[in-house]
Amino acid sequence: GNSVTQMEGPVTLSEEAFLTINCTYTATGYPSLFWYVQYPGEGLQLLLKATKADDKGSNKGFEATYRKETTSFHLEKGSVQVSDSAVYFCALVNQAGTALIFGKGTTLSVSS
Amino acid sequence: GAGVSQSPSNKVTEKGKDVELRCDPISGHTALYWYRQSLGQGLEFLIYFQGNSAPDKSGLPSDRFSAERTGGSVSTLTIQRTQQEDSAVYLCASSPRRTSGRSYEQYFGPGTRLTVT
Image (cartoon, rainbow over all chains, first blue to last red; front, top):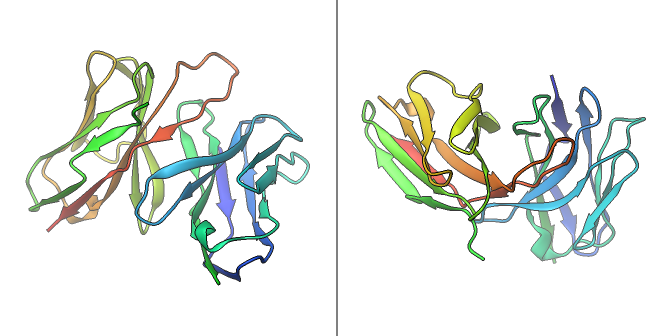
């Protein structure tokens, strides 16, 4: 079945550093891919998505490109801020199309 | 507009008791989902509703877990005879009507933190 593998955290960066969080997937076909973010004390929020190969999702300075050749959807940001400190989840739709399958989550901590 | 709401936000219960968790989806969203978030298991899918029916309940961990949805809106997740391993944050999400072949976004509620003592 469909599955997601996400890099282990925590990731600790200084403000304005470059961020990459790796995500690879196994899937039948080409399901939509998502990045969700969970800020401290808050619920899950959709950060960005891509619905087909070579699509690039972007939001709040974050980007991720749907790469079918490498089955990857890595999250990047050129210059992180303290306010980006959160847990980031990579996800895709399950084979039945009825639910999201999430990676384990990566904790990002940004210091000033 | 109003987002997904869940109640209670926190619930502490004794082992062996039954609990009910409530979810109010975004108005007009026909699809509703329950997930569980725990330290050891991450985010796990429990059940999916389309309208009032549940075509996918494959994630429910045991027959102690059940859920219903009425009027195509509010959903209740019931856990009977709670066990300590049921302690987790239970998340509800909803999404607009989904047409075949299209992607869909799920909007999550703040969750109910369940602690079984």
